Image (cartoon, rainbow, N blue to C red; front, side):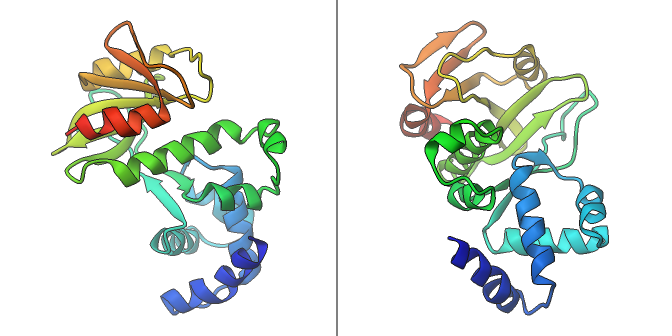
Length: 222
């Protein structure tokens, strides 16, 4: 994997877009993205840390997105009546590369690493993105008052499902998720965990394992 990362930065990425950049800066940028996987995008933060301009760092992000290495998950705010976050979240699409950039080489290391929750979240986001129906768009939702959903699926800009992603098979559903359901008036709402027999919670929320969600619930969301 180290060889792939090096070759991708030093040769493939530059050849793909016909540009030149400092290899060490791009690698440091990619590593920073790994440490902040699933965080809300702030170009100024990365630009200051790497000593380059915000427009340059935005171009670097565009290169990685164009090469299918990162996924920018946009914020849903089109029908919001509250103050909402409008910047995208950024995920590394390949969790193997994510873990390698963080020098995680074994499952026990991952279990003890603070990235584990966001690693799982990013993995689930990618699976939903790959398997959702083509007429659905995918967002996240967060207000400045604490309402939040990791994924919002919409059709023609109308929210149809809210999804929360939890690493625990016995999840505690935050008040902010219920507030999001109320804000967006979604009738289909899910909490996706690694593996559990599906069950229904109060207020029309289904808790289910990832495989069950992808195979049985996601295809019905149209």
